[in-house]
Image (cartoon, rainbow, N blue to C red; front, side):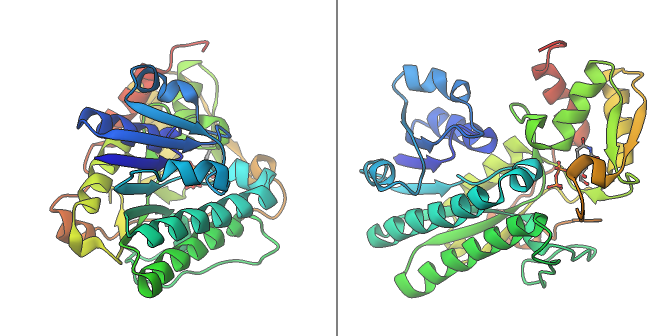
Length: 321
Ligand code: UDP
């Protein structure tokens, strides 16, 4: 099978590429390398298992040839990480909306099975016990740039579902809950690789706010297995599905856990949100997935313990690198 992965040089994308290559598929990757890294897929490219097209998914000169002979599309290319969104709001909106239009339009015209990765951010300030796919989304003011990520991804979801409804696109929308694992960089804000690196280097662990905010961290290998299973599930067509590990942990407890696993004496440094992200930032207090729909569709849910994921990330980070 020939598979197209937009954003395939990125963190989640490159693990997905690995899994498809291991299955014997031919993979086409479109990535502009804005946050993705060629080294993530370099070995496959030099072995001729992956065809790499560098450029933006919204550029017709890139996306048109990328669709050649493709039977399955994963659309992952997007602006990544809170730091990136706050620093480049305009480019982030354009990337998220234009790339999705370009991909969905072509996939619809050819009737190709498509999976779009959205995010748990779309729930916004909804702090329900277990967020269900049909729950309300609650956003803050348009003057707070953080919400543009949630709103642009939610708009992408509308786009995907409209293509499904009106043009018959066989698409599944997936909401990822804090995916983490090896190859994820802390440079764009992601907390787990940041804490692991800080702990290994003996630096203070920068806990933002009071550290009482709760998240569910999901191992990237679990995510890849779930994405692949969803594309093979006809009942997932036209559905929105949470993909996450429902175990929740506060950021303060995460810092302690990382230090314990890495064997580090690093202190915790509480950093106020304004110093971390600039004025007017709003964080989300809590984000826990209801994974009953995922379990119904594919028969399993992410369960890799966070402790194992932290060890895996630590193995990939050598001190001083
Ligand atoms: N965070 C933190 N220290 C850091 C980076 C992030 O305390 O060095 C916090 C961040 O404010 C948020 C949580 O960790 O409450 C998860 O942040 P991340 O950017 O990984 O994902 P988010 O859930 O915000 O998309």
